[in-house]
Image 1: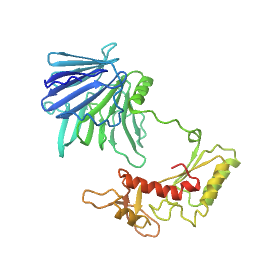
Image 2: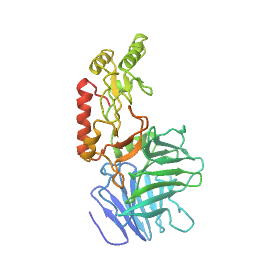
Image 3: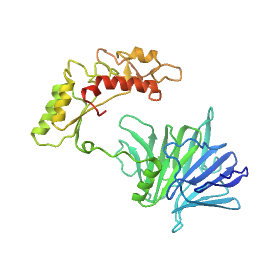
Image 4: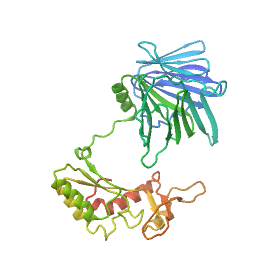
Length: 383
């Protein structure tokens, strides 16, 4: 790799060319990242070369970079990226030169198309502004309850909540796909006067753009982020679920009735409160007296039993004290393990609830041990 210390540079790698430019305090890096695709990173100081976010390591991709005065251009297949003297990027289709997307100033004079507000310890609240186009329709962003297919004109919080699954990837009718590659809580504003992406805490701005037909965009997105494993046949069948089944007899009666009527059924979902207390991760014995026999009968009917596993642990759970003492919970900034309250058996008020720490290998091992002892050995293999 050729590295220089000039304000404008073209970095050559064995597979491609990347543009790096210093614009004031910002370091702007644009490089090929898959077929007809580019990755953009902007930081105050050197970019984070190690962090990939949702992306896989860069695949070998041909690209051509060039400078002309204070301007730079990178061409990667069907997409061209132009960097102007003000540090703004414009993306166009190489076949006809049509503009697909362009950065624009957040306000009239300052701070340009990007904003960095320090949070401390090298992290920033970052904003990225783009031009909005009349008639553009935008699809994607994951699973939300607003009922809209076209996302144009709405604001979406980029965080994971019950029934809200945020995937910060959009496909535009203008012929591009866009991934906001910042693993942080934030939001996207898809307004009529501008598009703005926000991450509340990040070391840099990081996004990925690809160009093509909807099918090509989907394929290039999968190549850049990874392919999902093939669904087993049963998972593509009908799943039966409701708020909850209260007993083993009730769940089996529903499954038997489906089969009696000749209705297709692949999965029965056993949801919350099948446990003695939240965080016990086992069947309540009086309501579910013989779960092994239940699983065996469902198997004979060609039905999988799915058990809903929550990360929440009530103070009433038999596992709470051990998990607390072993440091297996997520803590608040003040070190307190309690994050919310939720109803539980045997309590007239909703007791405090903690969340198991999925980033801790010991906590993951502890949870799987409980799931194996209380579900998997009984034949449950869907969670």
